[in-house]
Amino acid sequence: MLDRYRQMTETALEQNLYTDRLAPILVESMRYGLLNGGKRIRPSLLLCVCEMLGGKAENALPFACALEMIHSYSLVHDDLPAMDNDDYRRGKPSNHKQFGEANAILAGDGLLTEAALLLSKQAGNDAAKAEILSAALDMVSGQSYDLNEIERNEPMLHLLHAQKTGALFRAAFAAGAHLAGRSDLAEPFSKLGQAIGLLFQITDDVLDAEKDRAENKFTYLTFYGEARSRSYIQETEQQILFALAPYDNAPARELKAVVRQMTNRTE
Image (cartoon, rainbow, N blue to C red; front, side, top):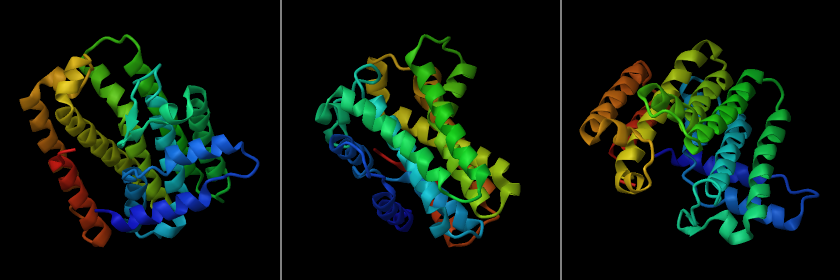
C-alpha cells in the first residue's frame, strides 16, 4: 500500500538531506536515523491526501520529507537511555548504540533543524508549514506526558496519544489539504488524520500488550481492556471509512485500503 508515495519519499529524502559544512559523523548518524528502511507512512499519507483532493504529489514532496525528518528525529531521541532506552530500531542497532549517546542526540537535533530549514525554503503554503511544525511541538508535549508522572485517567489517555502519536498524522492530512489548494477542508481532514493516528495507536497497544504490561505503560489496552480496545478499533475504522466515502478516485481507494490494513495488521 502507498508504494508509489513511499518510493517518491525515499528518493526525495536522499535529495533533500542537507550535508554541506556538517561534521562527517553528524551526517552519517543523521543518514542512519533517516534512511533506515522506515515505512514512510506519514509522508505517504500527506502525498496521498494531496492527490486525492486534486493536488500534485510532486509539489508536496518537500513537506512530506520535512514530516518524515521530524518523525525520524523523534525515533532517534525516543530510543535514548533517558527515554525509552531501546537498543534496536527496525532490526538494527539504535542510533545511540551505533554512534554513541551524544552523537545520537545531535543527529536528532540535526534532523529536526533540517526539517525546519527545508520548510523555510518553500515559497508560500504557510498554513501547511504551520501544521507540520506545530504538530512537532505537540508530539514533544505528548512525549513529556508519557515520561513524567501523570494522573492516569481517560482525558489524559486521549490527550497523551493525541499529541504523541496523533499529531503527525493530523499534520499529514491537514497539510495535504492545504497543499492541494483545499484549505476549506483542512479542519475536517485534521480530525480525520487524528482518527487515523488513534487507530494506529490502539492497534499498536493491542499488538504490544504483553510488553506494555511488563513496563506498566499507560495504554488504551491497559486502561480499557482488550475487548473494549478491539471494539474501539472497529468503531474508529468505520468512522474513518464513512468520512472517506464521498471520495472515489484512485488515491482515495488506496487510502481506504490502508485504513483497513491498519486495523488488521499483525506487526
